[in-house]
Image (cartoon, rainbow, N blue to C red; front, side, top):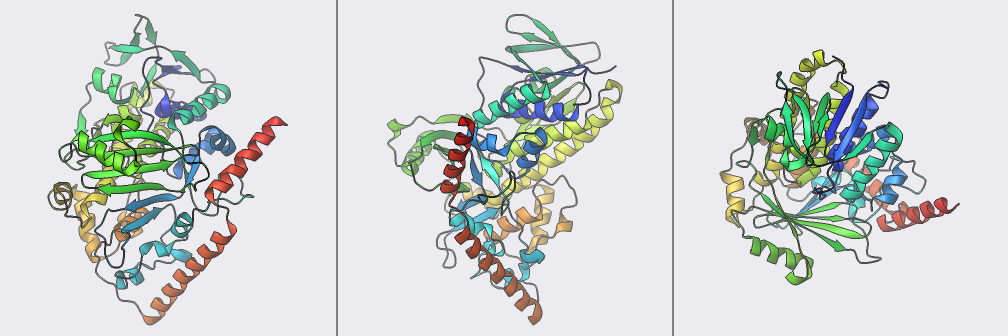
Length: 510
């Protein structure tokens, strides 16, 4: 049987990412109709405002101009994440901060980790890359002359998640022939083969399709409610379970940080994401270790606003993922598939990766679907497990012991066998590329090096020859010189964005 009609239940970032990926992959199959069904009654979570560089590849594939993204989604650049208070302040790091940048930890292509390990008491691991210094100087990652999707250093974006979904929707409808239907889906029914036969709307209408993509958010209408696919609960590994999100207008003319700020507190952490016109701030915490009233009080203190001056949106978070990503004629994406707290911008990253994986393995012949489903289920499960490991590692290697939350994370909380094995290995030798044997480790050696040694993880020193030590020092000094040079050449982040937006508006008036 040939699949001709595909329904995507739910819009937002997940639904429209799926629509664009599918439409691009199936562009030559002109008889296939893709329909996104959005409910006029159900809003979207809309707090996934940070991304990783992989999103640029997807946007290029979809044919979305970078200028349109920058001009319509309140977009700013993101060079990485600045972590503050994840460790106890020390003489060598009194500000208690480090960067996880989107750059290589190998200056000049050279692994200089041995030099860091010898000098870890006085050296910051971020010295191995130019990006942290440029981020601290508030510089744009692009020159005025840079072509679209290209920069002097690697970058991603912060954007208004609602507007980003609308951008993806316009592109899918206008360029890729994706159809849109407004309806509230309340139920679905199975056929005699255990497949979804049709959807049922609030008004009682039956909607029949050949294949269904469940992007219904935490409701997980098909994969969770209908199929009752088991949920792999990870709350024993990642203790944070609640977020308070708020949007704060930006002060005009203040500089815009080109990074996400992740500031730890006694029971979790806060995100601070700058857009062109506002900041998205979120207070992530473990409800077992902090009351909601205390969380609001702490958020109020950070924002320097009285509690009656803002109304945070409370988001309950359940860490984990569905045992199957693809079952029968249904695939689940976004929150319907799984969730891990927003540290390291994992939500959009995993959704984008999974949507692309599904689209590339999708077959228009229903009889060959099961082989692809079995393969993709293994891949997505592995991906979720390793993402959970990476997020958990930020907590478990901290030296903070100032609250019950941190004592549990560092001393008692369960770790996966692979994370435990890797951390034990890295006590002896620093991470290397061969430690990450799967291309489905979305976070690999580069990411782990910056986080491990940003947090002063203790690895046995490695002997170097005098020649090696001198060579490594020269490479780091060249990196510092390059950063100073670029810092003098590049515009500030705000200035670049203002000049771009002015030029964009001028081009529209012509």
